[in-house]
Image 1 (cartoon, rainbow, N blue to C red):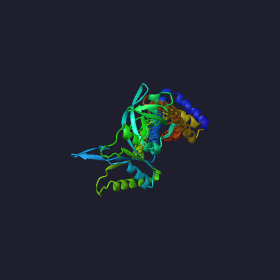
Image 2: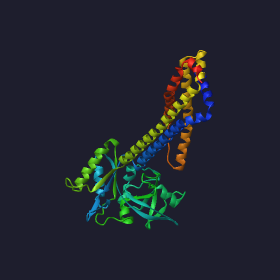
Image 3: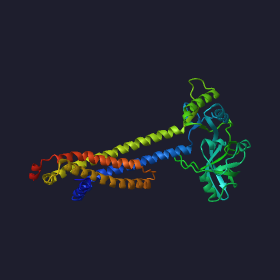
Image 4: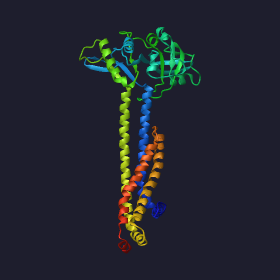
Length: 410
């Protein structure tokens, strides 16, 4: 019996009991669909994390002020004014791995243009800030160091601010007011979207740090040179560890901290935070995929059960085939092809259900998904292997039946 005839015979046998066939395939269908859906959701989560890393800036170290302690109570990060613009300049000059070190201050403010107003976050920065954050200018330009030195009243808008204040019109060259201080818009930033913490990164305005301290947010009375953060961009990802150690040593020396004394600053490597999130997402994806593969194994057990029932029901047929010249390997092939056909049909149906399920998850839960051809191929291939593995024993049992005993079977 050739393969085509075996497939035709297998399809005929399956069509003879349609409900039983569908119920038998159900485990394979659910298993394949689950593998595809879970891997797609996991791949989408990993891609989203990678985008967030890029949006925050790759090879980025954020230096924050330390936490103040008063009356035995330790306040949060930034409560102690320990970082200055001079620290940022020293990092840029004395840490070889540093590409740029951009000091910044931040605060909230109401902005007004014409009869429209919008409350947003004001960042007082230097021109190096957009380099550290890898934040291109979509329209216009970034203000220069001369604007920082002169405390010029110029501003670069995030996309959200530009849209809410100016609508569809071009904001470059227009004048808006920040806390009643007029600013000329010189540029608009490329949109970055939400951060990993759900904050709209585009809801911001960048102004020169000197302008922010003198005319908008105000300077710290105890230390006018104090800043809220320093964004350090490292030249290469392989130098991140060295850069952290060098920055820590430099700041401890500048702040005159004694051995054993706690740092009065904090270093955050955002790439490491996102890498941990990505690893967690990958572990969860593998776990869910493993659970889905268990469904395939359960489906395989169902195939073995039904195939054993089929061998019992068709014992006389097997005896008759052998009596007219069919060999044991022909019977083995016939039932093995039947089992593989059953699992393959279930695999095809599972692929369709998995794709639809992925789209439904993306639509209802608003999760990003990425359909992986490799995952689809893996799930289908595993379904076929399950058919061969669990179908072999019933097929072998059928091929070893004694023709005379089989013909006598009632």
